Length: 94
Figure 1 (cartoon, rainbow, N blue to C red):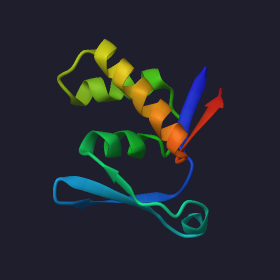
Figure 2: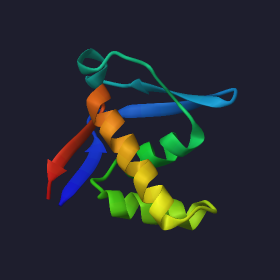
Figure 3: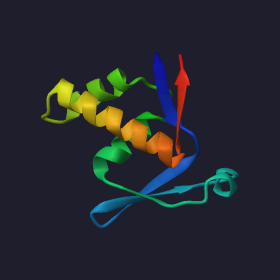
């Protein structure tokens, strides 16, 4: 089973309709990019301060959003694939 977690210490700040994510502390030198995310992506990123499975993330989103669990699972799978590729989310076997 795969779990996902933030790779770096990232802080998020709302600017208008989107959120900006920047690394802080020592991680600034490891991942110097700025992230631009929507509210849902920040919600997911905050969950990933602790390792979580796709099913856990989708279930928590299902409690907050009016969307089917199946749809949210597909959305989260896509998000994790993209964020791992971008390099700021870590994927590990549990």
